[in-house]
Length: 124
Figure 1 (tube, rainbow, N blue to C red):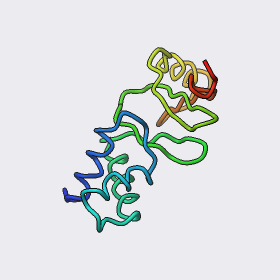
Figure 2: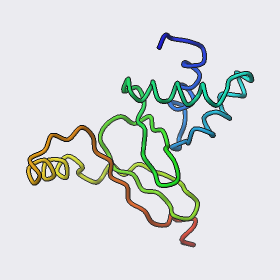
Figure 3: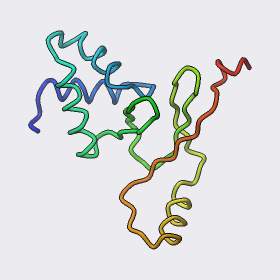
């Protein structure tokens, strides 16, 4: 995919986010500067950017989210509000090594998702 203003704006929407936005959130953010962009274009660009390794597609129950952090890491998703946050303290590399040795399998990707309640939803 060639470098277009749409691609640049979608990428910036992900890179400038402090959350893990879903496609509709990204669409709404980009639409403020590109009012004629379509949701289909945003989907297409996000798919391309994730395949190119410029952003990370996070498979969440309830829909995909997008992450600017490319290193292998885990996520925590609030079961109540849907908030997704990075968890860097989990050694995903050890999990990957164990899984590879256990199943003698070539692994192409890894996704670790913890679920629970965030501080706001838990009432603490």
